[in-house]
Image 1 (cartoon, rainbow, N blue to C red):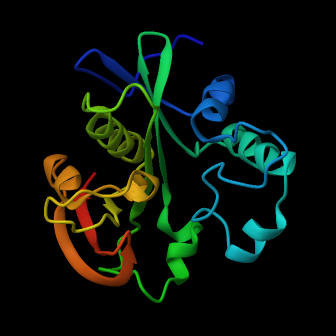
Image 2 (image 1 turned 90 degrees about the vertical axis):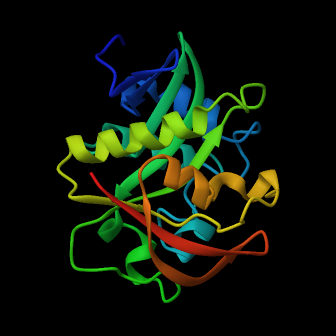
Length: 200
């Protein structure tokens, strides 16, 4: 499974979520109970109706199929050989965001979206979210993306509930070279969300 990483920094590496790494994807986004109809990072990847109808093990099978595609569904961060983080990244045109009435289009460029950043419990507070975001940009660039955008909360330093923190914060995106592109009509954890953008 050894391969040249997308990114190597601060003792971490970031790799695309290939099929060979599917067990690590499962570790990061799969539910503890494989029959549960939750997570797998599908709520913003597929239409809401499909997400509701995709149940139990079929959810994991769907994500496994995504890892077999030429364009992978996200990136994974590692501390040595241990997976410690996940970031979902894909062309916005392939996601429900393309039809969102709350997340505006900035322009006609073929933007890629980063919408879920997860760090494994026990590894938080080490800068892994930043590593994941930079790695996601590196992957989008490798795939030819002209720009990358995210939709984090503009929490102005206030604490964000961990269950909703997966969208990221404005500061996290600013620290990775993103700039405010537009307000949105969306909120998360009681905070307004914004469109943050950077060239890939």
